[in-house]
Image 1 (cartoon, helix red, strand yellow):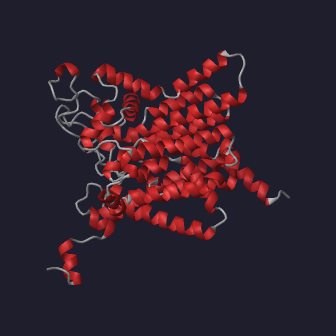
Image 2: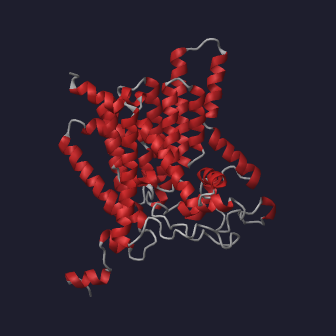
Length: 441
């Protein structure tokens, strides 16, 4: 008779079981989005099956018609669908600009969003003739499936243990914005490229890993952290190995350059097309009326700090919780990984958190609940802390799931609904609340 523990371990490591777990998590997220959309807003998964997202007037329309017909297409989906359908066709070239004008002055120009995810979606449409929203949705599903499957691969099991790997995977999926894995957003593709780069590093497939890290840098601005993380790991590997002959040192330098190839190619394209390699950052600041600020993190505007706590999403609270979990559990969570892997995870943590905080500090850390989902070592630390503390684990999962469903998911699905605030938080007007408690003057 086979002992139970080795049998369970063998099952947990088997490819069919890992695939079933990945599919189950994706199904869970889609089911929760569909249920909430139906129960709170009377939405169907596809609100208009007969009309795909299109531009009636691509030269003047700010967003495609029916861009949000899918319950998984909210927030930034309109921008990625627009980029996939018309690219940068409405952006002015430098030769057309007068003094004080910018290529993105026209709101139809989407320079304040990374284009790579949308371009891949456009390629899928060209090959399959799918509607653009479904093309991007299926791209997200495929990327998330691969990402979840890789999470339980051998290098991850070696670093986290079987229980640690599956517990951290559970914590990630039940995190406040775990549903992002099945949405029309860039996070799934970035996560897949990042974890793929790490697995290639672990297996010493350095060239493929560098290309995957480079791809991550082209998906979203915080993906640049993946490139830096891969460079840091290569530096550690090289210094420990002292490779011979010396030309191998030059090869490792080439690999480091490749790990940032995505962002460098985008910057080169922006320089050629618009005359400004940093036009994404400049356009983003103009579009959202903010400036990246490092000093604002250490000397915050108290009003913005309070807004990050009470505003929908509660981004400041989620950010603070993530920083606290990592500070308490990072040593134990990363202890069993090789030194180069630890370098990868630490730089990834610092890079994503740092880039995201600097870019959002003047918008009350808006979006940090979503960005923290990509901070993978955070979930290693959480699993290490909670593994032998069932009461703490149960309390956190309860709070996280409640905010997942009634907070962030409701905020996401109900974005364009006129009664979103009431349906998600049951808030009433200030006047009616004042009358209820006798404080209305």
